[in-house]
Length: 264
Ligand code: ADP
Image 1 (tube, helix red, strand yellow):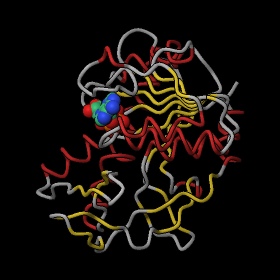
Image 2 (cartoon, helix red, strand yellow):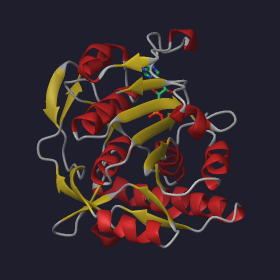
Image 3 (cartoon, protein in one colour):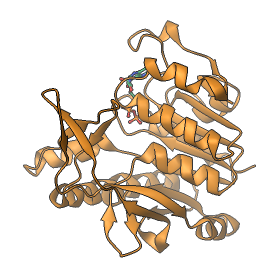
């Protein structure tokens, strides 16, 4: 069974629990984000991240060339290397790849991203974000068949060889679909999709595939990207998506057993 696991980078995620759990398995791809680290590095370098909200309510990082440089330093440069080292400590051989490596995540640059600023809809200038159009599944399969764990994160690359930022949850959805994964697990710092974002008791345990739009109303900010990723993975043929907590013992096994919000 091939599974795709994505672990978040925001504060409150437990990478060690995820790596401990994954070390006992084979045949999975680990996708990572790390927006927190990008923000911290950007602050340290005097190039703070900027975020904008699209007219449909999705929050995105502004990806101008200066900021993309910070993103590359923080994600493939730091977060990914740390994950590979974490696997090495657990005697697992992992290979870190950004979406640019081997054309793993081939994207088209987005045209005309829009932001809502003071109630007005404005074009986002100098935006280097993209939409994934192809996943080099062959490369992932080659690594898996050599008992190497692929550790994948943003950015992606265009046909013309330009680096573009892509959302890590969406990348995980695309990889799961391309690999015909049986399940996509999105691990984060909350127990799943909550009706009230500050109250874990309001967890929505299950969402049928034709009900995804109706729960979208509960998902604010960055959770919205996860629900959109779940929706696109289901639409692309992934039978099950679970949004669940990365904290505690065996987060992957628990998500596979149905902990969190199960979309199917
Ligand atoms: P990660 O870095 O783990 O991928 P994000 O910060 O991108 O995580 O997204 C998870 C965050 O989404 C939560 O920490 C929470 O603050 C926010 N959120 C917004 N709406 C909801 C909701 N309805 N249920 C759960 N979390 C929500």
